[in-house]
Length: 354
Image (cartoon, rainbow, N blue to C red; front, side, top):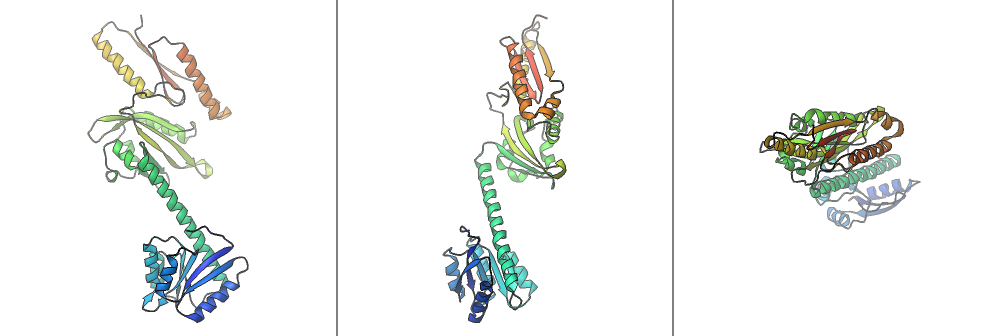
């Protein structure tokens, strides 16, 4: 669609009756707020050639165009990929023709003999605004699809009104599935989470939906097509509508299988996944060395929600960063501290005396 001057509109009328052309011209002359440049094509072929020059903001096709119809021209123009508002003129009220016109891509239709200047202006304004909205939506969808295809992360989009979830092809590939194999439901996701990680996942999700966290973030295991479990990281943000009700949530889904350094983005500490991996190594060492002692400490910040609610999430983030620094400074070399999520931390003390 070409750049549109809302006060100066170029219109193409495809009409084989000269009297109807002059009548249409008179109607446009009655407009006070908009200036029109009206071009006229009196045959089907001339109309198609004019359309292909991309010089107009809106088309008006008469239904009767000799041996062919304006509906045929409409379908041919749409098939060529032109995204310009099109109004079809019909000689009488015919519901089948009107319905066929809208189905084929017409923005509106008008019945000859019943057209007034006010009705024509309303139809033109509606057609232009409607088409511009559709073009903008299509461009955004194309951009979204391009990002989804180029990203190494899987993308997801959860509509809480329809209860449907969009999973990008990469999201499906991370768990070894094809896009067509996934149902567009949130249960498709939840059912694949490792049983030991489900409650933590749901807790992190609920906290964000209650606005207790600025973003949803969780690292957990998901069932792969080969029946193994793979570590993944999901991040997302909710969109809230009227009455503080969440209407939509979208985010990314990252495969952590081959991720060497799994660190928390806020504090720089190891994440839950890396901490559990180190804990697994320590348990393996215990099996080999019966006298080897270690300890796991779990810490959280009391009344942390009060900080977030009273001073804001930004201040809460600064507090978490400072807590992480102080805990790290108190540890010995070789001990491990991780941020599990929210205000929760875990410490692995290696090789202790008692």
